[in-house]
Image (tube, rainbow, N blue to C red; front, side, top):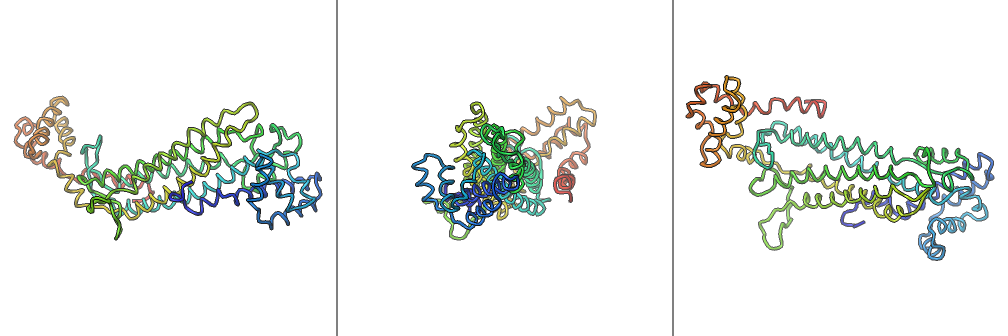
Length: 435
């Protein structure tokens, strides 16, 4: 975790204090269930809650015990026993370390998911607002980085909205995927603990019982979760890359907000660089990189090993904290994005009507010209625009083969910009449910 790319709420999910509090709650809820089943005294379960619930766990003390025991859960349980007293002997009855570790990890991932879902909601709201603001702002669409046909900037943002809406749906599913609890004991057989304890703890912690654990919760769940975070990161990069391209000096159709006092370069005072979206591109690469080790964690030896453990100590906090920061940063970029419609219009007209070539091509075919000949006629005149800076409409009107097939009025009509954006409302209705 790098403080530069961290926000407090998400960091708190992964703090030592939070982890030990969750560990305690898992153990205490298990004691409640064991007491109801008559395995341990009810007064003992009550004492555990009263003393442990009111305690502030001493992290330095736990670390000191772990240096001796070389076992983090035992270190915690030893410290908890110091707090609870004699009734601590009933804690962890029939459980194994992974019951605590895996259930806690999934609680933390679920909580992290809730923060990320809120982040996505904020981003979606910003995208929707800006999309409707620019629903009819004409701009050039590009394919291969080359002028293609007109669209609107609002449609571009609607595309991003739909993509992040899909991201949200995937994250909801991924959250459900990892929100499971295992309190099944050694090798997952429940030999020393009743399955009803697991059911009780799962309900208390907002999880579902793992149908079958092998002492560890199966890691295909986590692989899907981190892969989903990677896809969200890729969507962040896609939009960030679009903004970076639009901010290039030769294009300059949109630009990150440049605040008073901000500096773009230590050497060149004139610079206004897309530093936020470049940063987002880098952060997206990091979040994606965590998907591979998560997938490699799926294959563990037999019922369990701990080769996954060190990986998850990294990727759990780092992936969620980084993605949380990236989503918040992207929301800010979208919210304050400077948009230049005049520049969009200037760029669109840079090649003097060339963007209408398909309409002319289709009109010629509908007038009886073969597609091959129609393509040849349109391309012949289009190349004059590319190579000599000619005006496309003027060249078409001067071409006797074109005018033999199409009246002048029909040719001129094919240069109507509004034709290309007439279905923007349909797209908005599909994406937002309203026009």
